[in-house]
Image (cartoon, rainbow, N blue to C red):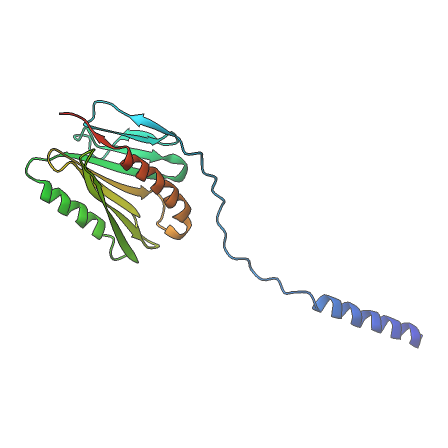
Length: 195
């Protein structure tokens, strides 16, 4: 009887040791869904507008619903990422300085949430295309990328990228970088039409 109890006791001790030696489960870090991006393909936007450009085939062009009285204001919609590139057009009539200041002010409105705002000049004399792009970095920034282009005489276009989700640009970072390439392509293929 003692031998049986001794064997049971040893078995119990070994079981306790084996069970207690397992790693304690630790919570895994919060993960985000994997994002599959489509192949980069572009199509030409050429209509009655005073400008033309190439834009991605996986986007849709819609009139700006907030500016029905502005016929050349459009949104480039990216429904799969709930994003929009808002493009607004203005005719230059001795008011270019005001448009340039408005573009700078709208980009700088994000200073309170931005960790940095980088800017690069856009200069292409062959296409009469001059402007600036703003890369706005920060977790809670509402518009991470903005730009404007002008011919300095007749035309002015401003673009701003927005997402219809709560700003969390750490998780949106892959999408932002993907769409920046498309916006840069738009700028590189942007042309003014003859008056």
